[in-house]
Amino acid sequence: MFARVASFEGGDGKRILEMNEEAMQSGTMNAPQEIKRVLLFDDDQRNRRLFITFFDSREAIQAAEERFESMGDEIPEDIRGRRTSVDVYEVVFDQEM
Image (tube, rainbow, N blue to C red):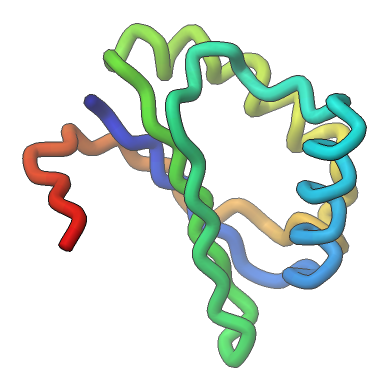
């Protein structure tokens, strides 16, 4: 399992959550099909977010990059914020307690 971690600064964290909920309910999210799981971390005090998506392989992440880029074009920067980094990590331990 691999995780793609995208960091964002600025934007409107509450509106991002609303947009995600609306898209999920309406079925219009159109996220890359290879995604296995999504996590969104929000630090409203520093106005930063981490958007973490999980995939089975690095190749699946690479195949999804074009869709991620187009999603960035679909959401105005004043809502999504400015992407400051994208990193990929292999998940070596995942334990629910």
